[in-house]
Image (cartoon, rainbow, N blue to C red):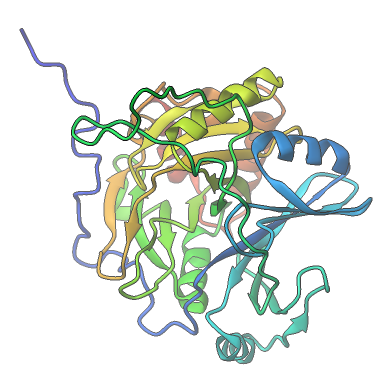
Amino acid sequence: MPVDHDVHHGLHVDQGALPGEHPGRHPNPVIKATGLAWLEFEKPDLPRTAAFAADFGFTPTLHTDDELHLRGSLPGPPCVIVRKGRRSVFRGPAFHAADHDDLLRLSNRLGIAPRPLPDTLGGIAVTAADPGGARVRVISGAITHPALPDATAERQYNFRDHPARVNTTQRAPLAPAQVQRIGHIVLQSNRYLETLNWYLEHLGLIVSDFLFYPGQRARGPVMSFIRCDRGDTPADHHTLAMTLGPSNRYVHSAFQVADLDTLARGGEFLRGRGHYRSWGIGRHIQGSQIFDYWRDPDGFLVEHYADGDLFDCSLNPGWAPMTASGLAQWGPPATADFLGVKPGTRSMKEVRSILSALATPDNEFDAERLLGLLKVPNA
């Protein structure tokens, strides 16, 4: 009997850089950010946002008529900050500086003075803009909320040679998947390479994996999964991911939960509450996370994930083609909604962005890149 062709063959992270390709790190960065602190949004309907947040598994630390702070169960500041605005918009990420001296070093390089954050957050921040226009804060001394009780602490799993649960059943109730912490943010930029280099130089981030359009490796990468450089201490495979596209925009954000059981149970809860699953459940290739993607009421894509890869500073970037089949080791095929090709308002907006980018010479998205992008959903 013939063996089925493995569509994932050659797509895992086993291809190194070719001579002259991007090294994936800056030789002398200004600072080395230690992690992603939070994301900032504006939305017109905070009660609706708060209701979805509760279903998704966040815990509020502040909820007023004008502002909503959402945290995970692990110690730290809130991981999402939503302020009331006339329309739904992503404002930008905030990163942790290693210490106050690093923040001052970045301030001097950028020529931007540190400013105090509101009392509800504490600490100080340097606020800049990356080349794609996203507002980027680098913070020090922000509030650290203590850990919350772990909803999975009493759960026990039986393995073949290590039984942990005997004469006892597993009956976890259907409930929101308790978010532990923020994991990563994915941004699209029509100045991808310029924006990537900005983060590597100013925040000391390093690339875990590069992707290139099929047949266009010689033109360079079009997506990068980027981690914090913590030296010998392992860090998430990616804290930031950057991808080339016709516009500068938010793509999705991801939040860690304890395990597959929590993720799947939380997904059933979200489905029962009438929320829209974009894609899942599956396991990614780059990063290896078990994933489940949902749309919030404003259309923002948010991800539950568990069991992601951890890399230290010694690993060099992997290189692979960007293909729809290369997005997951297992799980359902990537949906039209996740790929951005589902007919509707979002896809029409992207079409308008393509036309605008092609008509404007001062960006990296040209006709050849468009042809490469069009190959991705069917590759």
